Image (cartoon, rainbow, N blue to C red; front, side):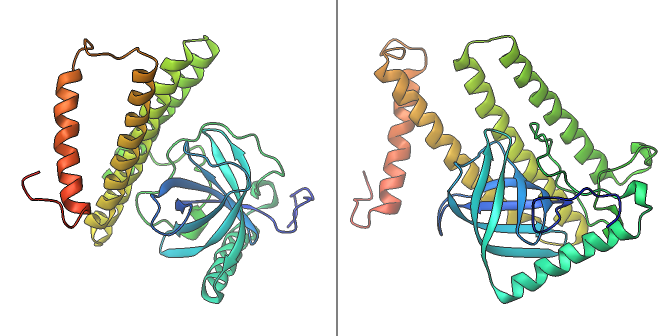
Length: 284
């Protein structure tokens, strides 16, 4: 391809919008991410829930109607921004899907004038990502960032307008978090704000999937388990933080809401025990 500088990588990476589900192992809670670019050897995903470099994980990548499953290795991890993944194992069918997808992306670039062709730089500067998952199928030639002069929001599909509003809100929250860091706000406040923004991002990503499936005639309710998994992760994280606060004595028996929390935890415990422990009495 003309106009693209040589790269140390064996395969060229191409910008590609899509979604990804990442799991440490089968049955583990999913981390949801946005696909940023892809090649025959790996991809980059944008997520605030990053994993350490060297972590092996299972992935499911969705690009329009194409789904790729396999195992990957985290080669690079940018905290709260994203991860570079190296594909370790793909089935023969998924390998063929990947080759077709990358070939399609390369072909769409070749059809452009040389000055408009764009591949991903060798070591691109990564910034906190907006929510980029498309809300409905788009033509192959449109799988690159939108250019100036695009149709105004008023002329676009309602789901596209909704997606743009979500993206704008997430971008504003990301910018606010960066400003909090620059202004040296108490790290404890930044950490809580970061967790809250992460929850908003995951929920908004699921919302976009729901709108996409609803508009394309699919079953939108198949994305609801993602919300349930997100609640599990949020609850576990909150419980960990509350436990740390109790150990640090910043929470005690006089803390506002502590009695209500105790009753809620008791109710949750009884239901979980009844569900998970077969011989648990029904009146516990």
